Amino acid sequence: MSLYSIFSVLIDEKLLHTRNTIAHGNYLIFDREEYIELHREVINMLDLFRNQIENAAIKQEYLQQSP
Image 1 (tube, rainbow, N blue to C red):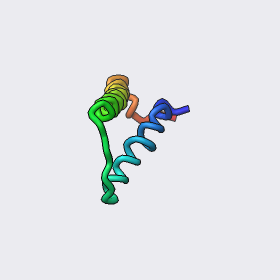
Image 2 (image 1 turned 90 degrees about the vertical axis):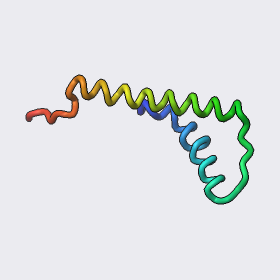
Image 3 (image 1 turned 45 degrees about the vertical axis):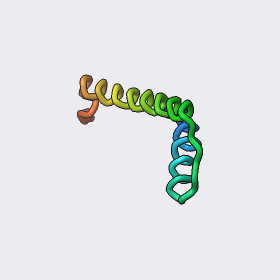
């Protein structure tokens, strides 16, 4: 199970659905509370991703292992 699998509903159903609805010219009612919650969830996901990158850099996990 991927660390990001918990975000699949957020990405697929909230972000992509909202983006596609607007991109295809449809009007979407999006209230303030929904926006704040979605914003918080996206920021949390980006923080997690950033932390993984920083940790990999500190541990030099990007270096190729010798056989």
